[in-house]
Image (cartoon, rainbow, N blue to C red; front, side, top):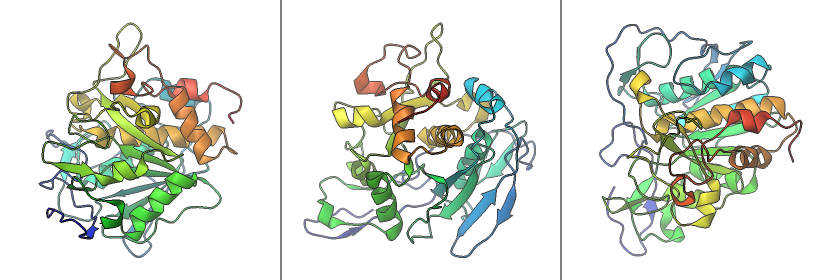
Length: 335
């Protein structure tokens, strides 16, 4: 990304996985390839519209539990909450030749970053309708008027620190997502980032994730950090050394939660793989609270996060705490 000069208009672009500036938020380590099959219940009927946007409509009655997941998700599925009636849009890399090997199911696969993210959402909320929008498709994100809409952002948009809002030339895609988050039209789930800095801060390369900054204070935006595992009271977990954290901004603290990322089991690490867990949780919540607004779903996830499962919990590091799908689903209704 070129260094911005004062008054220069900078076009913000998302680049593919493993870019030198780390625009896609996910570092993926290798795992021996066992099979190219995906398996595990994340499949579905695929429709291929134009403009590098595709939709997967699942017809799945329940989920399949894997050990990287929090055990509470199985209870949610057993109660019949599998994401039905929700619409999850993942913006990511779906068409480049850059792939990585990992394992979210019982077999390994070699897939693009976006394919991993979309698969993870499908495993968490198997009856959700999933839409894949590639980075090359910069048109406004299209929502489903009849469903709870969730947008997963497992990437960042970086430029040198110091840009004014007037210098940022968002594409129609990012402009629409920011507006949806601000207006409460969709739950927008944003990976926190992997630079071990506070949300919205300057990283070691002198760059800022301006997409993070644009979502600070938005009614329906959630920042998701990565924990070393799924915490319990008896065995609390901690934030990974790479994860960005909430910081001292009270607004960000109120928007920040974290979930366990078990890269020891999946060989997929980074906050990229924290965000789709929360996107899945939002879809599961939407299948119970069918009249809830995106802002209500957002607040329910934030307000029910646990602090007693995190070692040395602090609001500056962990924000609201560890997301808890069990607590979020507990009430009969939300408002």
